[in-house]
Image (cartoon, rainbow, N blue to C red):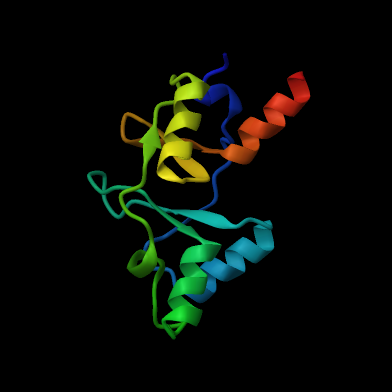
Length: 128
């Protein structure tokens, strides 16, 4: 069974905590992605995570202003994190049990990558 590190994406899109929702949406559009990692504000801070769902809730369901809200205001923080050395089956169990589509991969309090259920399913399709 592979480890998280073998299947994760290492090129992770990040955005500063003070960026506006408009800036986050622009970055997502440019990169063609549906989530961004919120950078730590200090070495002891936690990484955050923002998704299309978070943005939709904040600006549509709650009438938020995309130029007044920053990503820190609506981000999930702290996020569920795993080590890149973790067996993939435990990471998938964690995602399924918690209803998550993505996990941050953190080692020594530093961002190493991101693992999505899609990454795992694509891997299964390749080896099947």
